[in-house]
Length: 139
Image 1 (cartoon, rainbow, N blue to C red):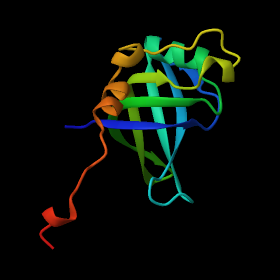
Image 2 (image 1 turned 180 degrees about the horizontal axis):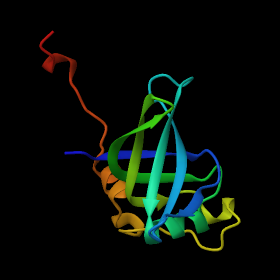
Image 3 (image 1 turned 180 degrees about the vertical axis):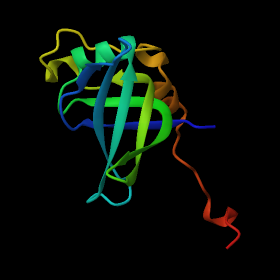
C-alpha cells in the first residue's frame, strides 16, 4: 500500500502549468511541523492533475492550511550526468482547512469527499485518547 496523509501550510502560491499533451498540473510545497520535535519542519512537494490542479491553483494561496491524501512517487532525473531523486506526493484528495474568514477566497471547499465525510475528518473522528491503567502494563 502506498498512501500518505499530511496536514500543513502551503509554502508559496501553487504553480499551475500545462504539459505538452495539454494536461493541467499544479505543483505546491506543504510544510508540516513534526509532532515530537517542534523546532523541525518537513517540506513535501505535491502534484495535482486536471480538475484538482485547477481548483488548488484557484483557491489555495501561500500560508493556507490544507490536508492532502495521496501516494508517494519517486522520480529520477539526470542533468549533466548527475542523477537526482525527487520524492513527490501525487494528490488524490485535498481539503482546504483555512477558514473562509482568514482568506480572501470567496469560497473554501473540499475536493473529493466534501465536509465532515472527507478522509481527514474521518481519521480525526476515529482518533481517541489512549486510556492505560498503570497496573495493566507488563513492566
